[in-house]
Length: 107
Image (cartoon, rainbow, N blue to C red; front, side):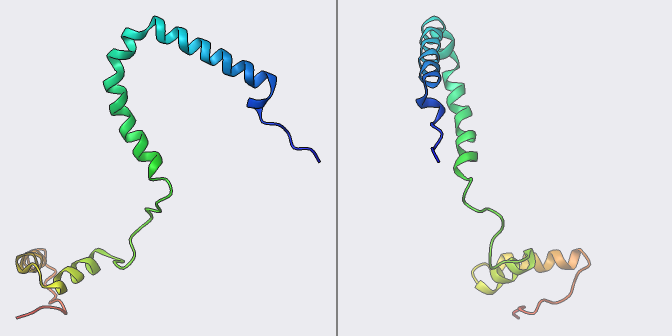
């Protein structure tokens, strides 16, 4: 069984490459002023496009360890680093009507 050659290695593919190259050359030579005018905007547009394509395989489906927002709050409260944050969370719970005492409350 023979493998089908790639389009770019056929005579039509080589002709396409030369045609694309010639058209690109003449467009750049004739419209250089327009290209330089829009170049800063194209660079800024390139940033979000690169961001989208570069994060493709990172698996941003979720974070392990914190299954809920409550779990993240408990973990932060247990760390003991920010007492003001703990007081603010508990005061917010009291104001919202959900004044169940938390299991990790320190007095």
